[in-house]
Image (cartoon, rainbow, N blue to C red; front, top):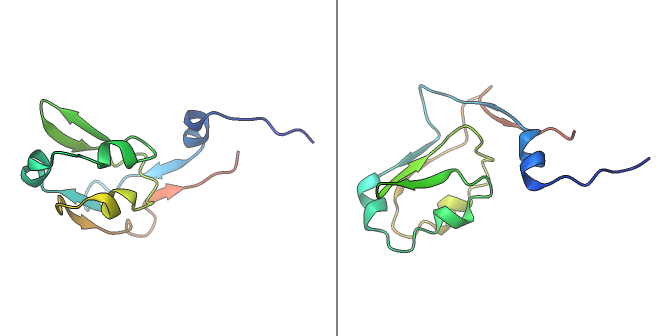
Amino acid sequence: MTIKKLSPEELLGLNKFAVDEEEPHIVLDKTICAQCKEKPCLVVCPAVLYTLKDGEMNFDYAGCLECGACRVVCKNKGIVKWTYPRGTFGVAFRCG
């Protein structure tokens, strides 16, 4: 048996996501995020889902690994809601 070494992008591509458009599991207060100078969520998210566009923080729900790293490093409470997605939504990890 041989094991193929995959890049992080290839590994993340194996996951399946069901996005809950009606009830997002992470909600940001963009006013608080705009005042945050460090913006640690931009570097801590393993799926790189936090982005800055024209100074405004954005989050893409599709691809969230539900690790909670963003919630832990958010010192200014810009993440006003963080829960696991409702049943049947969220990430489904695959092993290849």
